[in-house]
Picture (cartoon, rainbow over the protein chains, first blue to last red):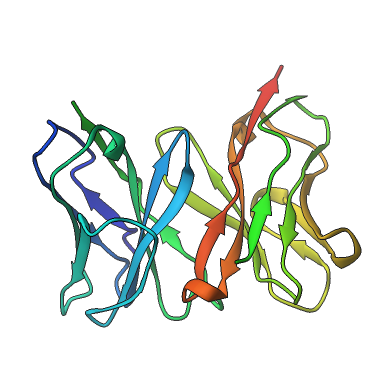
Length: 114
Length: 114
C-alpha cells in the first residue's frame, strides 16, 4: 500500500507570493491533517479535513487555507507569504477518528520563503 | 488544553546502552498519548500509543513506554539502542479541545555514539 505522498518536496518562494501544497493520503483513508514544523515552534496543527469538510482548524491566520477533494486528496494554500512561513509542512492521513487510530505522515514539503 | 513537555532537548547514548526519553503531560483525565519518531528528512512514524488499560505499552522497533498517572509521565524506553535509532522523538497528546488534533512536545534529539 502506498504511503502518504506530498508534492512538491522542496520549493522556494519570495515574500508576498502564494503557494499550494498537495497531499495524497493512503488509499482508503478519509481524514487528512496538516501540520507545520519549524525549529522554533515545533509541530503545530494547521487543520484537518474529513469527507471534504474542514473539521478542525489550528491557531493560524486566514492566509492559511486548505481543501479536500472527493478522492480524499488534499491541498493547502498559503497566500501572501511571509519569511516566518518557512517550514516543513507535513500531511498526515488516517482512516477515521484520530483519537482511536494512528496518523500516517508523509515526508513533508519544505518551503523556503526569501 | 492538553499539552506535553519533553524536558530533554538532546540525549546522547552509546550503542547497546539503555535509553529513556521523558515526557510529562498536563491533563486531568486519562489522556491519549503517543510517541512518534522522525528520522532526518523523513515524516513522523508512530512508535506506540496509550489510550487505556495496561500502563506498559509495547511498540515497534523494540520500544516500550509506561504510563504513570501519579507522575503525569509517559516515558519511552528501549533496553539496547542501535545506531539506527538516532532520530528526533516526539511525545504527543490528543487535544480534545481542538477536535482531537495532536499536541506535540518540542522533541528530543537522540544521538547514538559507537
